[in-house]
Each structure stands twice: as structure tokens, then as C-alpha cells.
Length: 252
Picture 1 (cartoon, rainbow, N blue to C red):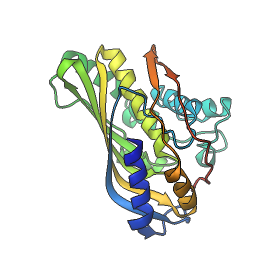
Picture 2 (cartoon, rainbow, N blue to C red):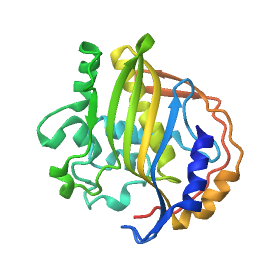
Picture 3 (cartoon, rainbow, N blue to C red):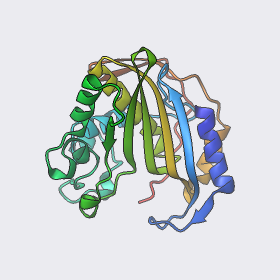
Picture 4 (cartoon, rainbow, N blue to C red):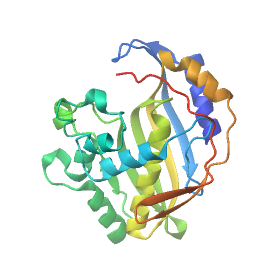
């Protein structure tokens, strides 16, 4: 899967349409890019170092319905700092829509877990984070916004994800890890086996000031994804090998 990711990165900077985007930085964008991976190994990218502490923190923040950056502050993670208000609030973003959709006490996470348990053949195992009613109150609209689940042969659980927008170099490697943890979490709570994820990215982009970092990354060696265990919402990676970190500025 990492080789496909590198191919998308290279294709984006070579053939993407250049746009003067919301951030003012400018980016190269491609339409409707896709990645697929099996959960036999954990899909943490290896051609640069990815920090488990960051995606673990973001996943716990999401799954607990939090909308303040206190959890990130506690772990010295700054990825949401620029968007939070003086009190650290972001508005009704990801976790709010997951556990309290439209502020109406509708828990999509629990609903999809019960749906998978009680009506496994349903075609309505869906979580949607896109809520037009509350976009104006969000610091940023959600980038990943749709999850649908499918029980396959052998009690295997598959997940389809739609991401409206992806910062390919900085954001997507962490998004992939968060998505994988979500599938593992739901599989654990339904006694199913996490199997496969298909991700579609509608607007896949590389910021203009990430191009040199993308070239460095694409030229680096890739390693096998690590083995893992997932028990009681705890992910343990074994033998994660990676190249060194590659820093790049966040487009705000």
C-alpha cells in the first residue's frame, strides 16, 4: 500500500491542477484517488517516521467525542493549536458528530455497533460526520466524513471511507492510522475480524511548500508494515522500522 501512496504523491506533483487554495499556500490537486489495505499488518508508513502517540491521541479524542484540544495539550501535540479558540475549543467537530450528531444526543458509533451485531446483513451500517447544520460553528469542517461497514465471509469486517480532502504528505499517513484503529475498535466491540479498508479521497493535494519533502519521501526506502496486537482499545506495534522524520510546515 505504501508504494501506491508514493505513486499518488508523485502523480499529484507531476500532474495535479495547481490551485490557490483557502490557506493561501497553493497546492497541486488530483480528483478521486484511492487506497486499499488489508489489516493483516498495521498500515503505518515507513519511508518517514510516523509517531504513534499522535494518531493514538487523535483517535482517543475522536472516539470520546471531545471538541477541546486539552488531550492534545496534555500530550504536547500541536496539530490543532492553530484552529482552537482561546479556551481550546473547536466547535462541534469530528467527535461531536460521532457521539452527539447535530447536538441531538444521537450516538452514531454505538448505533453502528448495535446494527452490526443485530442486523449484520443491513446495508445501513453507516457513520456520517458531514452535518451542514453545524458547519458554521466548526473551526474546520471534517475532512473524513463517511464510513460504511460490510460483513464479509468468515465474520470479516470491511470499511469504506470517503475523505473529501486530504493533505497527502502531512495528514494522510495519520488519517490512515486513525481509520485503521476505528475498524479495529468496532471489530473488537462486535466480535468480528478487522479485514479490509477502501479509502476514496475526492480532493487529494500536495501543498506547494511540501514538494521537496515529497520527493525526499518518495526516494526513501520502504519497509514491511509492522505486526500488531489490538486488545481493549490498545494498539501494540511490533518491529516498526522507518526512515527518519521529514518535517514540513502545516498549511493553515
